[in-house]
Image 1 (cartoon, rainbow, N blue to C red):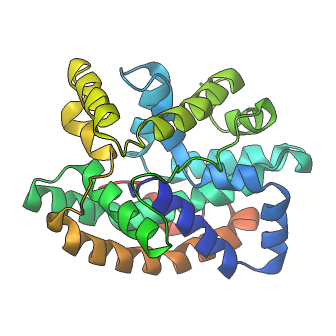
Image 2 (image 1 turned 90 degrees about the vertical axis):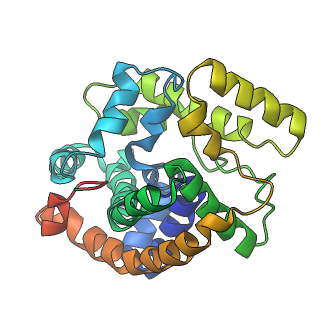
Image 3 (image 1 turned 45 degrees about the vertical axis):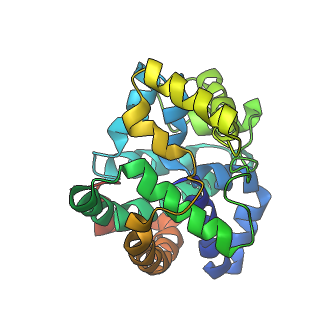
Length: 261
């Protein structure tokens, strides 16, 4: 999946293309929409250094047809009081699906051809987006828009029957914590994190989550291709969001997974 900053930027780009009525709905529950942009990935951060029942839900959803989540979520959102912001959250979730579904097949192909890890390909794309927007990729904190209040966690938990509001809140707090932890411009902190990942058996897959000091030239081509896929996915997300409140997950796009088919 594209990484944290790419999903954040994508959600803002989609928002600008939506009808005013939907924009107003999102604006009223902006923190929920912004959290929805990260889809099931928020569950990755629940005690992330070892597999458990909660983070397995997040990983497992990427391999399942999206209709399985979005149809049940649509029915649940229709049952919730308007003041809970359920649809605003799901509009963000649709953005996550549209971008993942559009980019994942290429990313998997790139991994096989280059040997660069999934995480590094995504983080290099984040680096490019950050630099283009005038941010320092080595020091910019990526999760400032994530809420950690129990009200938001309670709404999100409505769409994950196996997860409690308390567990969602812990995952959100952990997401902010680990994203901040991985901001490591100094060599000392960076070395400590690499050592910790090695000790926990996570170095191979997770070291790429730390932004490299210099861009990886092996990802120059993937940055170009991911930029194209990113822009193409905006119109898909807009269409799916505009249809969703009335039609649920009827669109055939939802038969696809978040990842590789």
